[in-house]
Image (cartoon, rainbow, N blue to C red; front, side, top):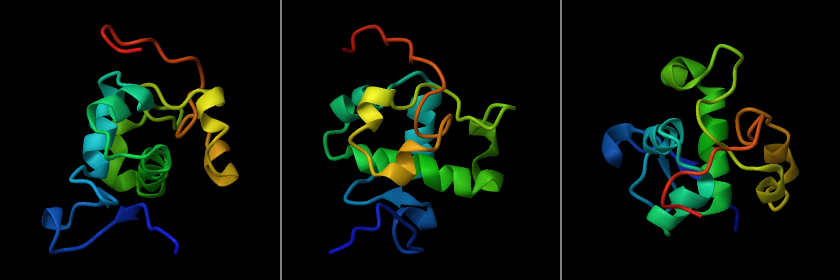
Length: 115
């Protein structure tokens, strides 16, 4: 069975793209990232998320820049910390190559209270 990690259904979440098996929209994930949460911190707050689901939400945003423009830096990277290279090693290869979108360009700053 292939899972579509980001779904769009006009009858769910008012049509806002959301992560599979969660009540979190792509916009929620991007807001968490832009507020400094690392993927590990997102998983700690929302254990129903999966690493690949977060990465697919980042990719979905990159594929729909007109909808999520406010979350992108001028250089095309997403604002906030993404996956580290070590964390990204467990992701499918096509997600690992999205530098600045899925994988951080630099090491993310740790968030106080999260490890």
